[in-house]
Image (cartoon, rainbow, N blue to C red):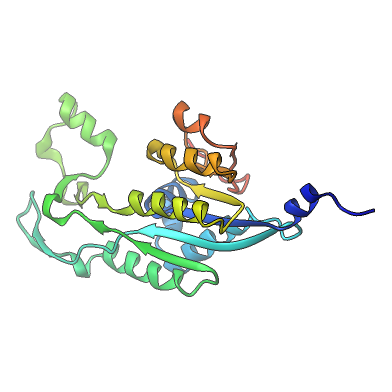
Length: 233
């Protein structure tokens, strides 16, 4: 008996996987612990495994994995508490992020898509949000803060735009049948609406992070491939 056109489409579904890098790294640290979060080679392997669990080898074809991130800052700054000069290019964060990017480009079917960090408006902030709230509320005396309680923070620029443009390109050029987005930001609602209007099956993997209703409304399926042993608070 001849297979139906629908069955043939299912057997040949081509899938692109788009990963919001900063989101993935934060969720990875929550699930697997920060002690498992300082090895770029392991993170790259974990990411590849996470993505490939979205691919059914019997009916799916991987088009490409896109990983969106920013190169780390390499400028020199002064710590707000101690006044000590710090060379960010020698920091653990710089070394980790740079090495992670090198490991990712070695992976098959992986494309590294880089935005940039807003260096002009970068500033020091308290590393832990809970600690920051306690300082603001007066529960903790700011004078008791330590050097390691601060982090130099710069906002990402261009990453969300690149994700949105790639979704539009994949959609309009009919390059894929399905898009899997690993992210948790409702900024992608317009892009997901566009893809679905054009017949693309749109899957969101929010890694068990709560998502807003407007994002839930404009996806076909909410599904994560995190191992069952991985839990979130």
